[in-house]
Amino acid sequence: MYDDLLARYYRPDINGLELTRFRALISALRDEELCDFAFAMLDGKLDLKLRKFVESKVGARIDNGTKMCFTSLVEQLLREVNGSNFRRSQRAASLLEVIATSVGCDPKLKNHIFNGLLDANLLSHRKRVYKYSRSLDGGALEQSLVKNWRRKDRRAVEAIVACFPPDLLSSFYDELLDEITNDGYEEYVERRLYFRAPMTDERLQAILAKDEVTYASVCAKQKIPIPEETAQKLWDNRMESGRPELLIWAFGEVGLWNLLTTLEL
Image (cartoon, rainbow, N blue to C red; front, side, top):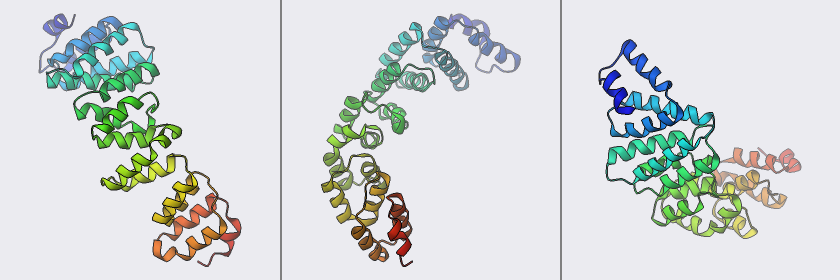
């Protein structure tokens, strides 16, 4: 089907009505034929715009429900991801990303695809997953993400902090914090760990000793009461922190009405 369509209706400089007809022919393919066509186009004969058009058609069909032929296509594509042909591998990963992020993609199939991309040797493939880190199913991707963390993939650490369920994140808290604070990660990664991991008294006191405003922000985000005496000390030290507006915000979030009404601004 693929070779026949290209031979009869396609050329590299195709445009105008001929291009419109070629796109329409692709749209008219049955699901099984579209899957075969999509896999065959990994050979790179189609230009980028047409490859993206085919990818969008596969994504649209997935949105209408995942049929067996799409599951088979996914398995074919995953086998190509670590193949020796770099460009073919990149095209396969691109189509897998479209399938996984389509609205109608079954969650199990989505996690299967993302696990496959996370297990890829190429960082560029893994990055296709990391960019969705805040919406990932961290529980389903735990093994792949931890594996990449162990092989010093910094983006995996950022994804773990963003998507692991709080209880799971808590089990790695000390190790994650040690790496984040000692290996030069961006400050937002550390803050996100504080905001998402369950807090113990010991963890809170360590944060307080390190940065008072961060402590107040964590309490505000997680709705942890701040003792009024502690809050007053934070306010008394506000000039050292240089962020009094964040302290006021945090006091409001944890309901320190009386303190807020008596603050000397």
